[in-house]
Structure formats: structure tokens, C-alpha cells
Image (cartoon, rainbow, N blue to C red):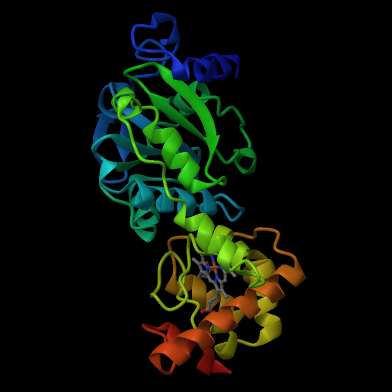
Length: 317
Ligand code: HEC
């Protein structure tokens, strides 16, 4: 932790500040690890050296809030656009290397449609633990892994912690700002379109919550993403079922609810997390989805049929 406080303080310092090189090749292990494509790479030399990186700590069997971290980072990847894989590299370290094989990481990353600038890393359990430990991820208990991310520029030696749950536009600025070349350029002030839209529509109950914790995985009317397109879901599902599913999908799965199990089969790679949504929030979210569906129906005609197997799921009863 103290290291990070010092590193954050060096953010404004120019190049040549040698004491900011607290991390780097003598600190970060250079052991051989495996990527989601099954390639063997050297951790420091191939993934970190000379690069600006965004590092997260995940495990694919997490039923808790953590898949939301990956979903938010996937939105960040979209916002960073072409810079990912060129100026900035994303790394997701598993904290469960025994279960998270390269194949499992591949399935997981594909569900989030991650691009080539984003590497998922596993390997020998002791090696992976040693790497995560160096980045401050020190819990032995899987469910305790925090949703913090680590940002670093190995070339300048600047490292800091951040969160995937704050404002993503702000995070984009922080990340771009780690590049000294980018800092030196003069830019027009950013127009905050996202904030403007949020304000304009803030009287819609459920919308802000949907945008923050549902939209990273779901669209309404733009197709399946990590989870199913939610257009029309308030009409095709029983209201009480929907409310309990949104509040705690893990509970329905644990009870082997047939509809919840059919959804698991349709979306095998990632489980929707239980995010502590209260009953009233679930009601607001349903009202929002309902309103959006109605708005789309007016604009584009009747609901599209649910694609794939999902169309059959609700005919069983
Ligand atoms: C990390 C990704 C993720 C997040 C975040 C997420 N979901 Fe899901 N959702 C899924 C997946 C995957 C499924 C498929 C079933 C499963 O995982 O159990 C699903 C299924 C659903 C379903 C069932 C759809 C149907 O066709 O019956 C609803 C409703 C739903 N989600 C609503 C929400 C709402 C509302 C939120 C925000 C509070 C949310 N989800 C957040 C991934 C996510």
C-alpha cells in the first residue's frame, strides 16, 4: 500500500525521476504463464515491460459481484477503442489457477467479446499466487478478492490502484494520463455527453441503476451480450419470478429452478452475479425495461422473437 501512495504522488513528475521506479523488472516476477489462447509467455518481459497496463484479478466461477468487474472493464475497453493493444494493454489474472485453465479463460473472455489487447493469465498455482501477491492481492479466500484494479506504466514506473466501478470516462482519462506523450498534448475540454444524457433522463426510475450494473452485460433491443437481450422480458416472464431472479439469481439456481437452469445452459460461460439488488430496485429496473420495450415497440414494431434456444424456454409451462 505505501508503495502505491508514493507512486500516485509521482504522477505529475516528469521523466528521469528515478525514485519512482519502485516496481519494474526486479519487482515483478518474470515466470512463464499461460494465456487464454494456451500460449506460454514470460510475465514481465512479454506482458508488462515498457507498457501501460490495466490489471484485474478474477476467477471465472465467481457467482458474487466480480463478473461485473470484467463486464465494466469490457466497457472500458470499448471506450479506449484502438488504444487497447497499441498504447494500453489489459491483463486479467486468475486467482484460481487450478480451475481456471486456458480453455476456461478462453470461454469466459469470449463471453465478454474481449479483443486481442486483453490477456487472461493463468499458470502454475504457486507462480500465479506470487505474481498476484506482488500486486497486493493477498487473500487466500477466493470470495475476498477485492474489485480493485491496478494501473501501471512500466516505462515511467508509475503504479496506482483504481476501481472499475467509478465513472468510466474519468478512468479513461486517468489511464490516458499515464502516457507522458498524451499528457503533453493540448486537448479541447472533453464534452461529457454521458453525464448530459444521464441528467436528461434521470427521472426514469431504474435507469441509472440499469446503466451502472446491468448494461455492462445486457442490452434492451440490441441483442445478446454477456447475458440475454432484455427486450420484452417483462412480458415473457412471470413478474414474481423476474423480481426474485434480479434480486438473487444464485438462489434460484441453487433451488434448481427450471427456468434459471435453462438460462445457465444457454449462457454457459458467465453466471449473472447476485448484486444485492433490493426488491424496490428490482421493481424500478423492471419498470425501466418495460418502458424501454414499449418505446422500442412504438419506434420499430413488435418485439423481436427471442433468438436461439431461448425462445423455447418459456413455453415449458
Ligand atoms: C456479469 C454480467 C451480468 C450482469 C452485470 C447482469 N446480468 Fe443479467 N444475466 C447475465 C447472464 C449470463 C444471464 C443468463 C443466466 C444466468 O447467468 O444465470 C442473465 C440473465 C438475466 C435475466 C433473465 C433473462 C431471460 O431471458 O429470462 C434477467 C431478467 C436479467 N439477467 C436481468 C439483469 C438485471 C436487471 C441486471 C442488473 C441489475 C443484470 N441482469 C446484471 C449476466 C449479467
